[in-house]
Length: 305
Image (cartoon, rainbow, N blue to C red):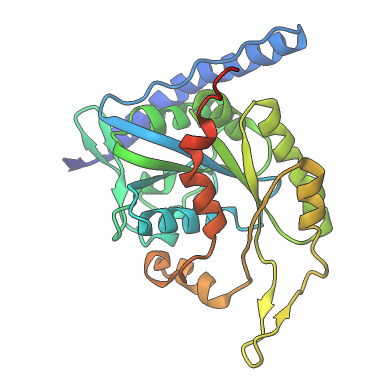
């Protein structure tokens, strides 16, 4: 196993660009077919021969700034603590933050033959992210839609994930090219939608929920981030954004509320320091973990009468 050279990284970028054009064309074709009333879409990306991914879940949000990557990190850590083998595909290609959160600054993806090898965190979680390909993690990733689609295909199909119980996909916010590609071309079994208490965000969350429903991807439930602040003196919960609209939003779309995460400076500091595995409090999102662990039963076909 060897670290990718600059030439190999450039070759991967070139291949991403070429492969992405085909993916974009497939998406456009799918849109035309839907307009004509036909049911079609791009084929699923092939799984790497050195991979056996048992379950794949996504984390989505209607807009940025609600802490979607933080929730992704929490889910990955809690699944790993429960004894599962876990990997994270950082599909937020132009705004990746997963490597920093897991203390992978200065780490790179490696190569084994023609395969990409994920970076590994101290706790053994595998991570693939664009920031793990850059010589300077501050370098902007300025890629158009076709290149982004090609990058996703590489990250999924050309990566030797090994035997993984759960692959957690951190999607970019919104309903653009990348979330569409993930939902159409990867075997996503369900998504967790992340929101925050502001009424505007609650309106926008409906867009990501409806997108998943249109793509026939189950929405497992909603997590509200930055829900409250706990007073360090008396322990009382303070709601800086006012009354939450979470229950109302969940009822509107017929979804369960899977958890509320606080605004916690200690949690933010742990993520900034790359210590989320070490410093994350226990059982931050137990209902999310229970829902994900129940996926095999939830997806099992109901016997015909």
